[in-house]
Amino acid sequence: MSELIDTGKYYKDCTLCPRKCHADRFSVKKGFCGAGAGIKAAKAYRHMWEEPCLTGKNGSGTVFFTGCNLRCIFCQNAAISSGDEGTLISEERLADIFLNLQSQGASNINLVTGVCYIPDIRNAIVRARDKGLTIPTVYNSGGYESPEALKLLNGYIDIYMPDFKYMSSDLAKSYSAACDYPDAAKKALAEMFSQTGPVRMSEDGMMKKGVLVRHLVLPGAVPDSKRVLRYLHDTYGNDICISIMNQYTPMPGVYSHPILSRKLTEDEYRRVLEFADSIGIENGFTQEGEAAKESFIPKWDLSGIISD
Image (cartoon, rainbow, N blue to C red; front, top):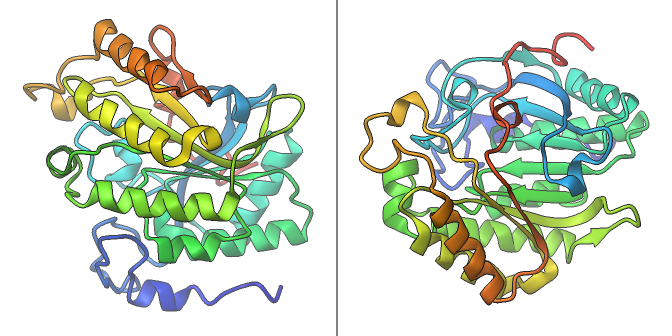
């Protein structure tokens, strides 16, 4: 257990993400993400709707955390990202959740939006490995990360799965209250790649190591999507996987928005895919038709969190 770290020092003066709020998360007043000093989670289950190289036959063992350091106005998980759905759990309980998912046959442990809890996540992985955790760990995030905080996860995360939402600072400011998102995402991705190296797959097509970047194509943002894909491919080539997603669905918070109130058109998505093909992106995934709603809007019923 020598690898356990003191989490309190990170939460007393929190600088775990690019916002560097310096919040005392032990106090009543929280930082931008809304997280306190304890782990808060809303659901854990075998998710069957991730990319095939993560889902496999038995699903990805997904743990959804409460709180987020972005404020995406179109967020589909707003009940946990900016709401208060979820319950407090200990590091020991989180480790047991990992082991329970492994015992159910999960292909991996998939940590969704864990930026607020990086020190605890590291400790939980240490505890779980001591008890027999052997499946890969996946860090699934919005891409707005601090390289310094990510270094705490070096050796504890096998697969990084960040979003790369925008190349435009204006879009990032307008949609996610983070004008520095493009620069922060570039730096975070560089740190992730430095830890894992190029993608490594098993003989059965399952991802074992590396980086899988997700990009959600937004209505009216085809030019920015092309800039994102150009950067990713020019920088990393086919050493990373790129998942180009069409599942944008307007949520109540944007019903009156002049652009985001509509779905992505087939033509917009087609133009992005044609561009990806034209610049030589080969290692990745696309979506056909409309993504199943249950694939990205689960019920936040604490299943898998308070009971096995």
